[in-house]
Length: 299
Image (tube, rainbow, N blue to C red; front, side):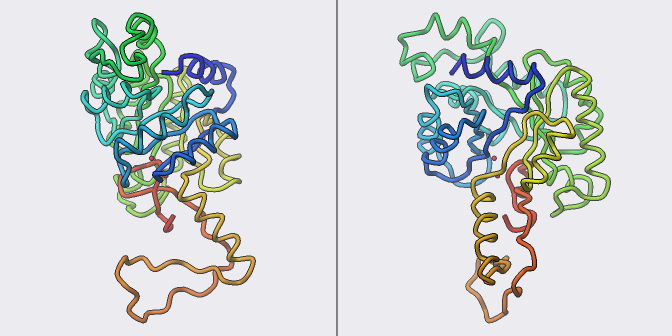
């Protein structure tokens, strides 16, 4: 755990400054190295969707060591065992998907804290410098670990105000595509009425003294989200940003097109003609709310 980086992260939020980051889904730790070199405030390593295994996650965390970039692991589910493992190998915090109640969130916080305040076991891994710094690490970990719930379901709406009262939670992250799916608009980044619902929940969270984040879908959208008051904006996901750049380059030479949606070999059906504009990256998957592909493009 990088205590100084976490304190810097929270100090920026306390000054109402945005903390900007990157959603990581690809296995190359060079991606996290780039984020660190460019001075990003955070990276989220997505262990819910996609193909990253623990070796990949470990390499990404190693790339963020001794830097000011907070490294978070987005778990596949709320789990005591998964949380222990992510924090033991050096994550500065976790992102927990599909949080809908204050009780669920309290359980997640317990997973992240050492006894007697929680149920995290003390391991002899990177977090404790392989057992050499038990006393120092366990003395500061409970107060500094970052626990970020993902709000990606309309089922969470009645509980958001109560969730803001849970001790140990500073930031909430939204997943618009999953939120839209649960509202009956599957496949849309922000279906009818969803944008207003998310903005309303953001106001509730900010009025409680907490902060909000989500992934931007474009450069213009990034500026818009910061203007709206989101203080943990994601620049995008590695895959989405790469695809966006490729589309823009292909457009410049009149070769841009939409990829086939099927993973089967092409059966002779033509793909769509050159687009007049590159598609905006929604960065949302079937239940991710942070890194998906409502338009074919993040955790």
